[in-house]
Image (cartoon, rainbow, N blue to C red; front, side):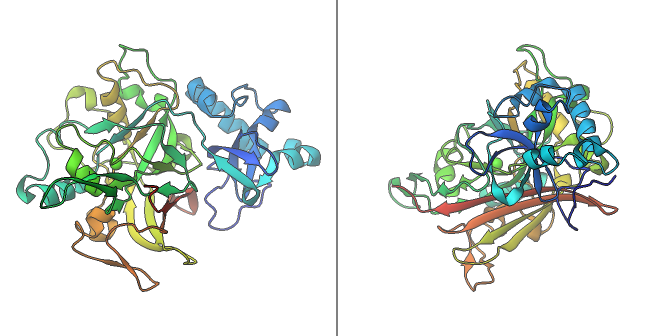
Length: 412
Ligand code: CA
């Protein structure tokens, strides 16, 4: 499959990917849906208005209508786009005026929030991460709590503070408890990232009608990189008895491009084996995980590049996305188009694959050296945290681009 658009070697965005996002072209304040190919963004509303896409889902400033339309429409649009962008189709290739209006170089557009997110849920589905946290804060011999191997643990997060890559994040203020004495108020001192992938939901279900696990992927549109910023000192004081609250609600960064399940289909793989066997409503047939390489870099203020501090993979996740969605809706809870369900921190088996500074520094016991000579136990003001992801096999690379966020001093 080749395109008339030049695809640079190692690009995240070949014709097989075609992720969806929302952008504003230079000199415009009108966000519009687009897809990425090579170094370009293609304006999907322009193609729709030219009569080249048989749909009206790209009228709005978000992808919610497209997500609500469901898998048959997702497949039809993907197929039409792959045909329009292929080098043996002259419709777009030879229409210079249309190409000039619809193609924008990625360096010249601003990526904005692709979705109006109604609800955001964050799971805790990496066994390695949950074991590390349980070992640090409780008991190495009983690191996993009794429910963990029976259900995908999660919590309802905060949708209003989900921001697109490139948005600065202020260090939060909050209440913490010193080892001795009463609680104090001030800037978070233990600011952390969490390396996650999140999925956006499709049509969803009516209140009272759970989504069966075998139908789950019909309700999953695609993935983004997620940085679930976390204030560890605030979290430690507040989380008993009801779990994370203000330690997680100040910002969650996502990558701008949503990579579809259709693009990731060649990278489907098995999850780790589950023992004990989950209850029947959590048993899905076939492979339901994905082999997606992930990394996190820290770029200190003034540095030209980031230092990679973590390399992990989505395939390590114990609970898969179908299980997460089936579990989330099993009470009859209604999932709506454009909800964001994130994986939880994705840690692997070895120390270099831990997906948070909490684990990489082992609760601040170890320092991570950076190439500018500084070292980190947690994230400092001026640091930019960069997450990247790509699935690669047999010369095919389906990439996610980047999820970046710079930490600014607290406003307090
Ligand atoms: Ca998280």
